Image 1 (cartoon, one colour):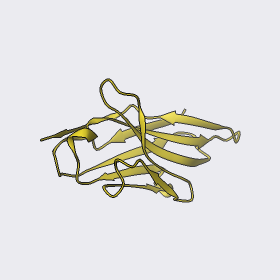
Image 2 (cartoon, helix red, strand yellow):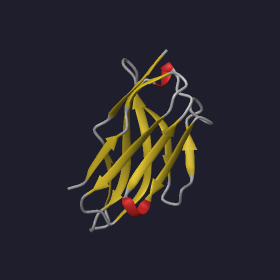
Image 3 (cartoon, one colour):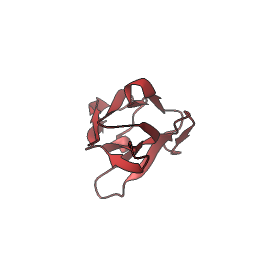
Image 4 (cartoon, one colour):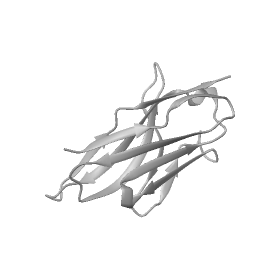
Length: 120
């Protein structure tokens, strides 16, 4: 059984910073791509940023220059440093990981989500 557990969400004023973490646990041979997604009320879930196992990164235009995605492969942990937060960044943030099991199958797992609220 694999679990992804996010932490680090909260309430912050516009212009502030937060750091999200997502720790993967369970029977894991390796982890391929990992990513952060977000879903605001009444909107579809959207990609915020993702990172390959080789640390190549990709960002949504709306967060480029403000957010930084990183990972610690030794700890099976994904991070999202969010700076210069705006009210429009308010959403539930989810992590996703493509995990390789002992049978070499690749399965996408999602975390339970963490709320980020940016106030004026």
